[in-house]
Length: 437
Image (cartoon, rainbow, N blue to C red; front, side, top):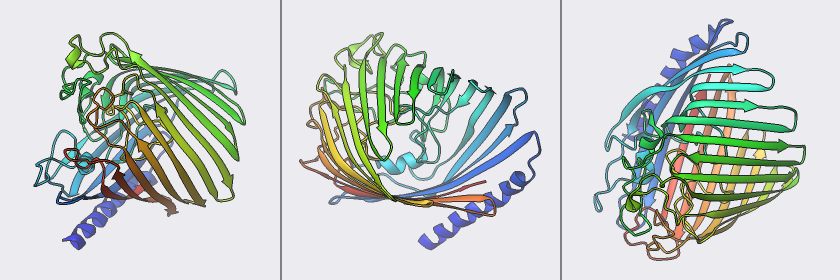
């Protein structure tokens, strides 16, 4: 069975390559085609009698874009995916795995799944100093970004304006009313996107009921940055209308020996998403202050970094994971700390790079609040040792770009985790192959 699934996966990628490559070769002076095919396979080996999980999926994208005419261009992209090796609920606890389900769809499919949609549809105006984008697009910022590690990305629908007045300054303003959370495979309003992932606990210990009970007209974004050869500083502001305001200040200094500092301040605006306190996404008491620090040194092909994060005890750091990515320097993939307060993290990261290959090894100790301290813990993530290895390589053949990635993650909790299954004490592996043309 495993051999047959591998064969089907390779056959599927080859088929996509042959279907789209002619379009790539036949590009004219006005219309440009590009394509992307990928496959991901996930495995989670759980502790004790809990079931292990295996899942694999294949996805493809096709994009058409016009060449700019007087700075104006248009772009459309469609995506589709299918499961190869489906996942199933845990037989002992009758719950789904966290990672494997997100490989397919967070809203549909416990055995097999297929899906597709128009992912990008936009108009763009670009000049030397100004860019204006209207439509379905990606936003690349420290907190809100595509976070592309499944079959699709986190994308937004709205208006983006960028202005670069000179070589030092950058100003970015945007308003977004629609979103497609990663692994949701449908476009919806920002308020309806919130709550599709695990909703966790309220500060009072009740189950979160944010889905369908959160009111917001959209996400506003404003940033200003000053960039020099050795010193950069950026201020990002995220306004979830009627929910919260998150201000993120980040500064970087140095090249070979360098440091980074991030400061986040967050508080409620409006009624936190709902006038009913028990249904609020962001309560008045959640006024998080967070600091993240990185110090690094480069030697030839090697980089060594000390990393740390601290979130204060006055509430929880909150931002909908349907839209966001943990921006902290000590964040480890599959181990997000969104939804937590009173957190201290420290660790070490080593990176080796040679040409188009990189290998990263990272250890982080994450001192989290007690899993039943709901005032500071939305997700119940226990204090844990986290070990990560991440290897990537890419190459080009006949104008087609290939990339492979292998991830290994191990977590070990320092406390009993009964009732908090698959949040620690597991081995997780992911293997990805991507083709771009």
